[in-house]
Length: 461
Image (cartoon, rainbow, N blue to C red; front, side, top):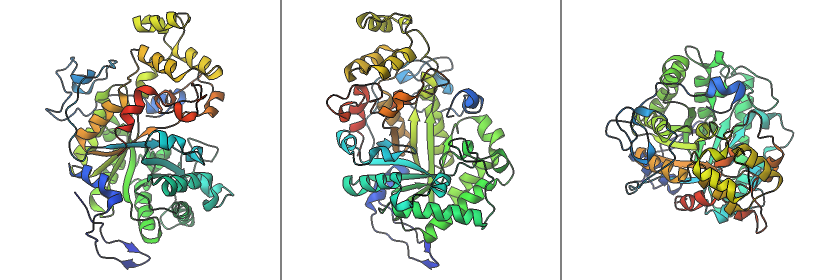
């Protein structure tokens, strides 16, 4: 399926709709035809129920209290089974996967061996607009911008860029701020910074997500109210980018949405936000769909989130620029590995006390890195670790027409200095390359997680 782009106003001029095939949008168009943190954030980002169940008859549903195929529970309940079985054949227009670098794509600067070793064709990152605005570095020289420019120009990677506004100042040392009033100097300054950063990448962008995680990154008074200011701000941001931006002809998406399968989140905590954003997508000819961040316990949770978006936007583009079973892993990383037969065997084989926890093992590996084979064997021995995670989630993507998913790409050497024993969210152990734990004698490109990398390569497009 090919799709022409609608006419758009740029600096007051309107172009005619273009019916030519748009190759950089082909993956998104064909598929469309068919919480983060612990401790203080745990109560906000943790799980609650009930949630949207997969549609009746969807693969993986089962009777209440039973387990469907691939270890999925019935009625959207979470499970700790990490098993998977054979999936149906991929349909035409199936999903692709790529690399998620989040806010530090600079880690790829002048080092494309990881892109090459993994056959990566899609790269996603967010640009923290307020952080870039406060920086003394011009956008053209910003290391994150430079890294995106390099992978686009030198490795022909498709780019997905999310604009992070972080008005709530949840991360970094910026102060909180209210969402700027429409057409205020503060709004214009933020839009100018965003536009300059996107233009400075110097390549046509495939996808621009008009936010990062607005549910977490917006103050309650600007999102949990009637007519939320963040919705109007997002509309204005899109208008500015379409009229004044010079970054190609991207697919514009709203989001990313977190935990959108939760009745409580959709109907009681953020009802006006969800309604306003979905109406924006349905009404605005320039916006094609929604981005999701899928962090879950069981696959049924992930399926519920995707199903909720597909129910709201039957023909819309859906991407998932983050996906991990982090909430599953956080339940188990402090358990003694000897509590399971496979874990006890691993402990014996590697002269570890059976009381060793996963966190203990990771901390030791950060101090004395292990071979990729040993780290893979450790994960294989943990009954709570799903070594088929990439394949399992991509099968869900196929089922619901998710266009692109991006996997956490690099747990780098700098993470060896982090403390994983206190209030740690274990996103790192879901990443494709894990030199934080592995020896890199043969080069950092040989630190890909063996259980993931072949499934990843099979999906890079």
